[in-house]
Length: 112
Length: 114
Image 1 (cartoon, each protein chain N blue to C red):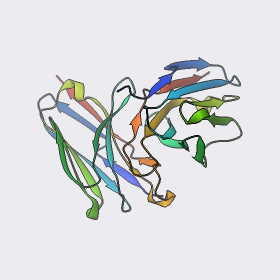
Image 2: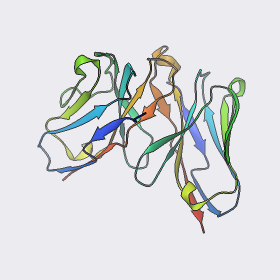
Image 3: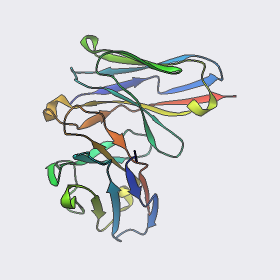
């Protein structure tokens, strides 16, 4: 099946700093989602971004499908941004289904 | 619009005991997913429903796990008997249809088997 790799695995920032998280995938995909898992375990949808660039407040994401990667940008980070960030893509080997394959996540800690 | 609802949020049981998790998807969402998330890893799909039909249960350990989605709305995932290795977070998600559509997740059930 498809491989989804995220980097870096861990990231520590001072409040106010900017960061870029990367997601590489081994095969062509027709969807990509970014999630934030908060300390209580809830997966919160950040972006549904098969291609192109989207922005939502201090967060933005870019997917370059032809080069098989996606980037999540966090600007002016806040302590509430702490948690684990996952990217996920449907497995093309399971047909046109919604079986999401997740990366291992990037654990972000924002210090005050 | 209400999100995906799951209960219970936490469950602690002894090994060999049965346990059940319940999920109510977003209204109007035909496709329902159960994922399992082990500590330090991303979620992995257990079973996928299109309406009331289980269309992909290849990752479900069928010797001890079972699931149902009566009337194509709520779903229940059961483990009987539970083993120590079943300790994990069980996540339910839904989407409007099967395919490359945005999935929305519930808060999950954290299971601890002692």
